[in-house]
Length: 131
Image 1 (cartoon, one colour):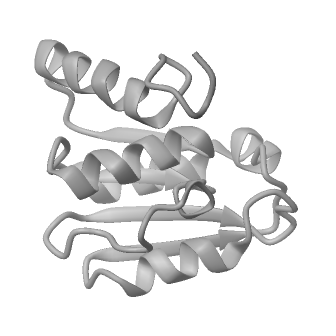
Image 2 (tube, rainbow, N blue to C red):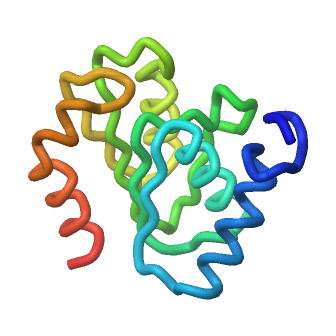
């Protein structure tokens, strides 16, 4: 199905798939990037995910979701200043919606190429949430 259907490449289809994976694998942390960040936002908003997470240039607002995060879950958002696909302001709005959300702004593009090369930023975020 396309992005408007309930297929695996749609937000609802991905939420269903990830919810099943969460129940099976019981992870301690989820990381969602771009479209996956939109899926993560929906998981958070529906209560399907209630543990710490990292959102990388999340596209949830672009898919029409409310810019609202739960107030009781630690969330780190990472967004690049040179992102031309998802506005940095989307991550700013999400961060402002929750007392436990933290925004890390880095000089990077939408695919976060620099973040991949500088793994210490992501490793530090994971350590902050899990340690």
